[in-house]
Length: 540
Ligand SMILES: Nc1nc2c(c(=O)[nH]1)N[C@H]1C(S)=C(S)[C@@H](COP(=O)(O)O)O[C@H]1N2
Ligand SMILES: [Mo]
Image (cartoon, rainbow, N blue to C red; front, side):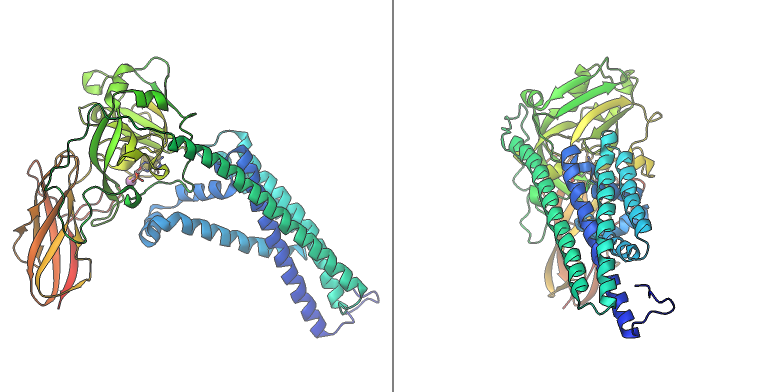
């Protein structure tokens, strides 16, 4: 490009512009290709080492863990259960942008750009090593290797793209132009083909692992419970259009967790380790062994602490599982009230999540369990296959560990689990709540009798009464469906003689101890939302 005669280049301004544009465009393409190569190589190496050690999963996971609460709340509110997909898309776009910029930079400062590219790999490696489920130094390899490969690809492509741009600056039509374009195109195509191959192979390997886990799930034959659930009483299910079904189908059951990729655990190689204060050594349980124990089957309503008043993160299912208190008692565990040295049970999952539960609650006679079945089938992967914990009456984040792999008996003073480190409460019994399912907020309904209906829950205490108020009118008692158990929600309905105009419908529940649900509004953090749910509707 430099003029051999010195001084300003001989070429015209138009050519210079075109050359600059060509150079930048080819640089961007080189950067993008290097980025693709990096992701593909990372995928392949991660498949061989540990799928969760891939840079996307590691950096995404680190972002989820570090995101300030308001950002997390906003993401959940805005994107709901799509929040993880949105995060991944955002990461891909960011990577693409950086890769393209580095590619452009590489046409001027090739070495610098390549070093920065390699450094991105190092960032991924640090993220992978810092994950709570990191398995060892090998977890750094997918990112490091990907960074180095990307740097090498960028080095070669940037070199070739510079020759193309140089040739185009000289007119670009001669043999040298053709030759340099050919060189760039073949290197670019080779990169694209190799990246596709590596990425595809990585996917296939990870897929094969997933299929093994799926096969182990298919092979599960759930035994009949030694203690079946009582039949759901007739009258516990109301027939009102728009109301939440009494039993939430698995496909509709809410999902809340921090896993960017749903863990696919092979039930055959899965083990549960139980250890800690009051237990000598470590007790190890296999899945087959758990299934061989006497199982209980119970209807339990699970609720997420991050559920807003009126929110969707609550569901009711029929669970099958091993009574957790018995299993702990066999291991020698005594609750604090009987002199046991541990007051906190910390459950850890295969993806490094930790949840802390009061030992007293687990052993006070309620149906705390290690669940293996949900509504008649093995747990779906999304809901914790092969085994999860459930403790009626406690929010999920202090009780319902999915993909559980160990239980440690410790104390609240000695250890803070994941959410507690993030300012959520150590202890979190579920608060009494009532929700209006129908009519929907801002619905337009015809004047006359409108059926207002929904669900109310107060696990462990039960729901005794639900009342509805229109505008500032008197509280009217709603019809309650028959109670199944104190651990499950109750449907309710109210026939409202609706008159034209805009109206606010408010609902509140009274629990089995006679306490009316508090009107005081509280945000979900630190120990669950409170306040009365209301919806505004227009009667026409
Ligand atoms: N391994 C793991 N278990 C977990 C979580 C998680 O992030 N990881 N989230 C908890 C929370 S906050 C809730 S509310 C319940 C939700 O269970 P579900 O997704 O089956 O409805 O799982 C709990 N168990
Ligand atoms: Mo939760």
